[in-house]
Image (cartoon, rainbow, N blue to C red; front, top):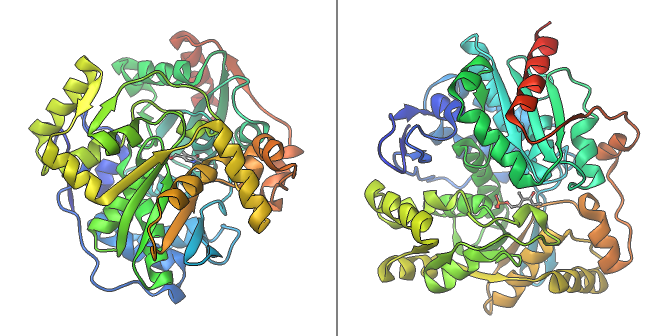
Length: 460
Ligand SMILES: *Cc1c(COP(=O)(O)O)cnc(C)c1O
């Protein structure tokens, strides 16, 4: 399988190189040259890891990852705390919850990053190379990236988070990991400051090559690919067509559902749930994406103005034309508004539906779900639940995607329901371990010092 850039001006690469490249050199995102189809429905009795390997196999070509795919999938998902890895529970008549919080850091990001960390390590070890994974997080990505990379021989990982702006559990999941190849850095500033700092480091060619910087952010194709597996798993378990309701901000998780659909999975509608930052819902309703200020909400992992993975969907929508994709994105930057033509909007609206939920209704949904079913759900899941149930058609089999464990966002859960969600034992150890944190100002010089220390200590 070969990969091309959505902007059409970057080298065509195979999977192993796309994995390590992240962003394409022309500023675009890598996508497979064609979306493979799966002819035989996976057999769920083989287990999640085997289903994932079957679904992922056509994407990885014949490099190092391909030669070790079964083993990497087995290792990635064997540590999950539920025998089904991604259990599907019936919460109403033909209404299901796909629980994606059984990994080590309790959010759906583990399903991709456990595998991506191992894939990185396999390819780099084979090439006798080493990278430093640098990322910024508003909470869940950082902890999942650290868990996916900790202790791996060929990777160091440095994660920046905004000091005082992530939850206690999220911070401890990053700061209590004792592995020498891991460092969590508290930046005195906002998430945007963290992200700007990471961008500045990647844009500095000297720094970038001195530390062999690499990224595992949500624009990495391998993450989208890994996420298609749980939609096929759902299809295999249900054995009949269904629609999905996905809480999303970056358009990553629902893009994976869209790719699974193009591969032939029997998914009918893709229902997008936004919080008050609802650019995507506006785009799906009107064909126009306005660029607006981000407001903080109870579902912070979805507080995003520019959905970075949307570019991959636009590329498909514009019949894989790099020119049309580039033009639309340039217009977005200059006019602060992305406009699709009528035909494209019609096509999008034939598959996607969308809605959004403000904080008051997030709390109300958490409270109602607890009152009616005794189930505690996190604020992100509540967004998917509320929008999915609101837009559901008669006789539609609906799967709501649960993206985090309620204990990861306990303050919001307690306020909405009066119940204290218990931290699962697999994650509770972080409460007792000592924390190790580097503190810096949002300045490139400060970051450089941390990177130098990191490389010295983990290589000694
Ligand atoms: C990251 C995250 C999301 C949003 O994921 P997208 O990539 O925007 O689809 C939703 N919920 C939780 C809990 C997350 O951590």
